[in-house]
Image 1 (cartoon, helix red, strand yellow):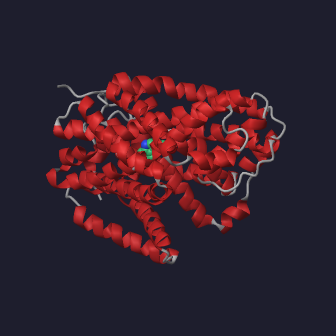
Image 2 (cartoon, protein in one colour):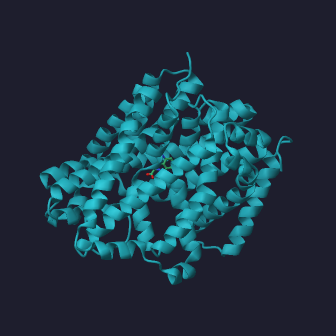
Image 3 (cartoon, helix red, strand yellow):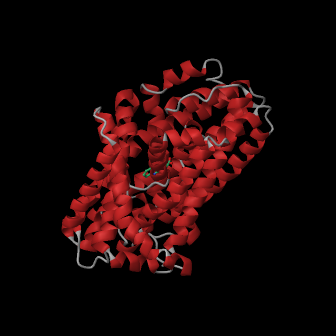
Amino acid sequence: MTRASWRTRIGFILAAVGSAVGLGNVWRFPWLTAENGGAAFLVLYLAVIVLVGVPGLLGELVIGRRARTSTVGAFEALAGRNWRALGAVPLLASVVVLSFYTVVGGWIVRYLVGSATGAYFDAPAQYFAAIDHGLGAVGFHVLFLAVTAAVVYAGVDRGIELATTVMVPAIVVVLVGLAAWAATLPGAGAGYDFYLALDVAYLRENFLDVLAAAAGQALFTLSVGAGVMVTYASYLDEDRSLAADGTIIAGLNTGIGLLAGLSIFPVLFALDVAPGSGGPGALFISLAGSFASLPYGRVIGIAFFAVIALAALSSAISLLEVPVAFLVDEYGVSRGRSTALVGSGFLATGTVAALSPSAFALLADTIANLALTAGLVGFLLFDGWVLGRDALEEYELGAGRLARLAGTPWLYAVAFVLPVFLTFTFLSAVTTTAGVPVEGTTLAALAAAAVIACIVVLRRPSSVL
Ligand code: TRP
């Protein structure tokens, strides 16, 4: 049987953008910006996207296209059987993220329906507290998962590619419409000020915290660390410039995030809703509450939640594809059976997350971040020290002049700088969660030592460094 592949380059790019654009953009990004000093955060975030996000994304794309097989098998195909174990971490990360993602997807579908019926209009806070977990949440999680699985079941080109080619442009069109409508609201100016104001003093005082927030967001929003980009790149059958594709994916993703902020903040300020602290509930409570009192609130609410639903769906599809492709590639299971099998697994894990808020929080706040970071460090060290020159060769296939110039710096970044940086954020998250905060410089030294130890173990003669 021939292996599935994308029909067009633009199809691949849109599928990857669909994966990247999700709750992270429409929800997490605008709020993080607002909480972390507005424009000052934006500048830092853009820098982290360029310096950490894009190189990391390329690190995954290179592995996937070279191996032409999905996450776990890619390590074996490129370096031998002993390396398979490295694939377990990103595979697990995809399972963790999707296990809570479909629950949130379910909330969104419920709010989409609720915007039409006005269900949440009277008491937004109580409404959210009533639906965020319990049997209703289970039901909507199942619905959302079923739609996700149907697309994955239909296949790479006829399912994922087709769906995202329609969904991503639809997201952009509706968001542009929403942003334009939001600009007409009386409080729009104050909203933009809050969103885009430059608070340099804040940034200076909280630099490390803001940097950590920006880095975590950059990885999550670009969908790296869970093998999604490895899997998607494994369906490429032409050697076009990965650097160009990666830059386009990151650029579109960032633009859509900015656009989401431009639609959200004017709405909140039009009604004097204090954009309070983040968290999963805030979008639903304050924003949904705003729709209740705005002219055409129902229509706006429907448009808004439809955008978020599409964004979340195209991300969930990519996450489901990782374990589905794993079974197809590694065990020769048919796509249909694999989707059914993996889907029923998620039926169970998502149900746990939908019933237990503490399980949900554990997955969404702690385990997901750690698993994604560890998964990405594994990919990058593999690029830098096991593939070495081969990674550079793959990067250069189809690359233009400019991209070629960036090749060697990219490999150095991926081999050393990024792993140390990511291990630092990993250790800092572990120590903070465990309640034993450690001095920043000590952590940095620990991170560097840990990475060097890994390099000593992993290093292969073919490495350029
Ligand atoms: N990037 C998506 C978002 O911003 C979420 C997502 C999809 C993701 N696939 C991923 C996050 C893989 C990490 C890894 O909502």
